[in-house]
View 1 (cartoon, rainbow, N blue to C red):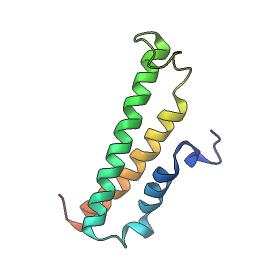
View 2 (tube, rainbow, N blue to C red; view 1 turned 90 degrees about the vertical axis):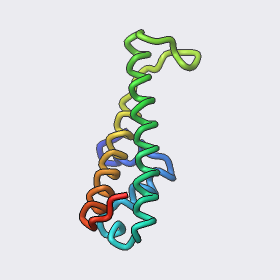
View 3 (cartoon, rainbow, N blue to C red; view 1 turned 45 degrees about the horizontal axis):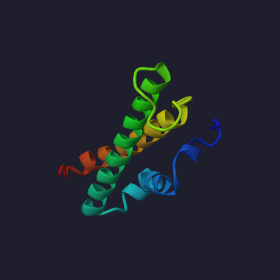
View 4 (cartoon, one colour; view 1 turned 120 degrees about the vertical axis):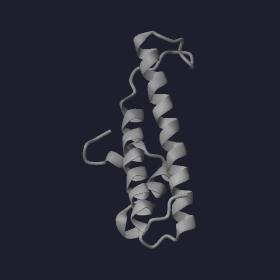
Amino acid sequence: MTATDPLRALDREERELDAQSQPDILTTLDDRQLTTLIGLLRLRRNRARDISARQGREMRGKVAPKGSTAAGGNEGTRSKAELLTAALDRATAERERRGTVN
């Protein structure tokens, strides 16, 4: 992954979720769409975070590899989790700004 394209770590659907979490788009979403976006971002972020943690344990030899070989690194997955966390933070801040907490 390069510093010039941080979104490279995200798949197509995750890039769309990230795009929806940009401030100019967030303001156009209704409350129901915003709640759905937050839920999807939370699911994706949690999955990336869990995979990154597992890969880290595999690299350190703490657990058996999930596949045929142990993970060689988790920088991409860690970066994905960070990007999704930032998107989730933006969406959550918008919901709090509106005063609609579900």
